[in-house]
Amino acid sequence: MIKRDLVIIGGGSAGMAAAIEAKKNGIDDILILEKDGVLGGILNQCIHNGFGLTEFKEELTGPEYLSRFAEQVEEMGIEYKLNSLVLDVTENRIVTYSNAEDGVVLVEAKAIVFATGCYERSAGAIQLSGDRCSGIITAGTAQKYLNIHGFLVGKRIVILGSGDIGLIMARRMTLEGAKVLCVSELMPYSNGLNRNIAQCLNDYNIPLYLSRSVLRVEGKSGRVEKVVLAAVDDKMKFIPGTEMEFECDTLLLSVGLVPYVSLLDKLHAEMSSTRGAKVNDQLMTSIPGVFACGNCLHVHDVVDFVTDEGRDAGRGAANYIKGLSEKKKHIAIKPGNGVSYVIPQFIETDLNNDITFKFRVRKPVKNVFVNFKSGDQLVNKVVKPVLIPSEMVMIKLNKDKLTNLPIDEIEVSLEER
Amino acid sequence: MKELTCIVCPRGCRLTIDDNLNVTGNFCPRGAEYAKNELTNPKRMITSFMRVKNRENCVVSVKTSVAIPKGMIFQVMEEINHVGVDAPTRIGDIAIKDVLGTGADIVITKNIK
Image (cartoon, rainbow over the protein chains, first blue to last red):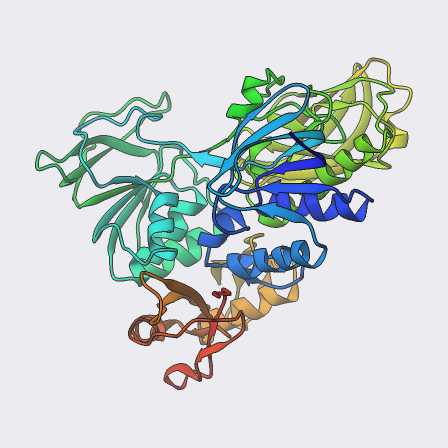
């Protein structure tokens, strides 16, 4: 068994930022474990631009953005292992990984940061009905085939789900010569960024059908031949007589992302409605010394915020290793009216001067107050003109506002103006 | 009066522009510039990949150095698709200079050893 101060699981944007920040905070003995053959995670396949506006005040492509952090990891001499899969993590922080060179290795760590990212919901997860044929593929997988390996997965495409990956792929496949027939979205609004609807769909006259989903897939030959869409009512039930048929060879699914937490689950870490772990103001889970950040904590829409969260976890882990993160209180943070989740779920230390609350709204709203209430006491009130579920909201509170609360709980809720 | 969604950054401001090119709804000056260009000469950045000739099954990601006229997107794509590059590549290397006279270079965005 080898020993390390800090083991970081995942060498993507969150993991690299956590490692760099921990090193800056005096932790030298760090090991990043990355299952892919390169650092950078999902950004390797995100060759489009739009990354880094907050971080660098520049608009970079994914590979350019990740290379700035990968170079820092190299320059700072932070150890990382590629092609290394973590098999197990125990409560007393023993990490088991394996790769072709080292075999199976046990690492005893003082702290662990989970930066394992997220995975795509699949056909099974949405109970897609119809033939089980080839040509049904998640948008991210199609993106990897195209942008990393140079293979176009189909020529006539229907896309289900209007998340950003689906929109980005609609444009990418169109540019590479495929015909994207439409994007179908179950909800009455898109889950993608406005700019992506403008520049990925409208620019190429690709229709977006809202409140419509796939009624069935037809593909008796073994490959997708036809996709039938139908409108849904407000209870998400198909409305008879609204069928639209599309002859195509591929159905791309962009129907949501889920934090990848199987190892954290096994540790019985307390889980939240984000399907990631519950964390405190240091991004520590309910397992002492085990931290989580990035898309395995909650799915982000902007990578710059993933980087920032990675730093918070790196700092949190460094504080823990140095014995600074003693728990002094326990304030529970709860989502209230109109809010689907809030991170962090607990405030336990006095280490941060400001606490940034990150949350998402349940549905698009205009002109609302965001209220932070502790019992009957209004702790803070913020006006927001527009909030939509696809954009994470961040509101900073000074820790002075969090003293003398009537109860050990703060509820974040929306109120109409 | 025309309504547009700004594509300059992920914020995606909803812009309106009138016949005298007065822009409202923009969070930053780049939004106003975008709206004016969109009415007079719309341009887009293109990102794609090029074949790496001296590596098996290998592609390298590229981008236009500046936005190109919207009407030339598919011509530029064709150009990108039939020119290849040789590894090693460095971020910032120019793969095609002044592609089709647009004034934009095709720039490598990934390091390949």
